[in-house]
Image: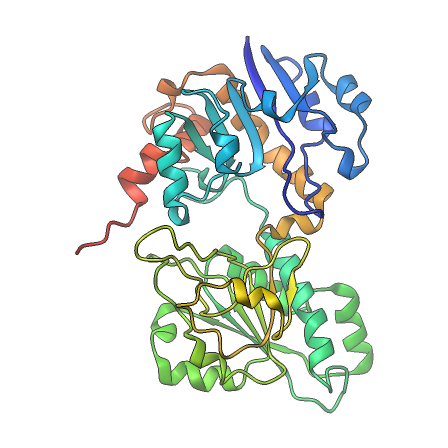
Length: 377
């Protein structure tokens, strides 16, 4: 019988997410044992008894013991010391973010860990199947408008101009951000603006043909109230918006960092954020003001002279934990079924099974064969 470890995420204080009891209830008939870390679900007010009622094969153990099982399932990727506790040849189902985590990929390969990256699980049309676009874009846009209401003096005035939102990136995160921005990120605020008879919101989405044009960018930024990074870069060592361009953004402007790529100095060339000089926020600190000491943690080779209010989070869906984990549980159920029932050799791109093919696309093998960007020196 295969053993699965479900450790808790010991990260920010406000990182409360664990899989819900209903997720384990639907796995009740699987030939597997589920080992949950002591206190699992407690941050969301769920007690051990609810999990034990949901699945007869659940046991509660320590964090370290969870990482010693045949398969480890945890939403956000474990730290290196936790990966080191895993058995060689075991499976890790998590948000692994291969394209922007080169050292993580290398460590998983060294331990012969079968990585299945939740963010790389894709259908036959290469669309993500484990994703919370609304939890990322919706939560971020709502918070950005909250901050804009503080920095923009005439935000609630019917005499103000339209609010201009500029989005970098035209993928699903950008599209969901555009939909949310059109309603001020919040239906209650949207209704209030209607009652006040204010002018609305204009959303501009910028393709690469525009982000590569500095003169055009300057024109756009001068009119922008909220600048949103929802980009996907081929090369994460290159900026899209250099720090000097931030100076053209309106003084009350807010920068929303939906992508939340970190600065990584342990790889060459260094990985940077799409917008130069902005910090990365967390669930505990998603709003960062220009004089915040967190700017001192940005690598010294990064220009951070020009600043605005930044709204950023490295785990956007975690703002609403229960809503998020209900969705992820529904999306991951058939994935976990296949991982329990099949061995790693069964996951190929020519499989007859839809979810088996999706799992193959989430492996390091597939990433390095089809998606990894190799620099030509």
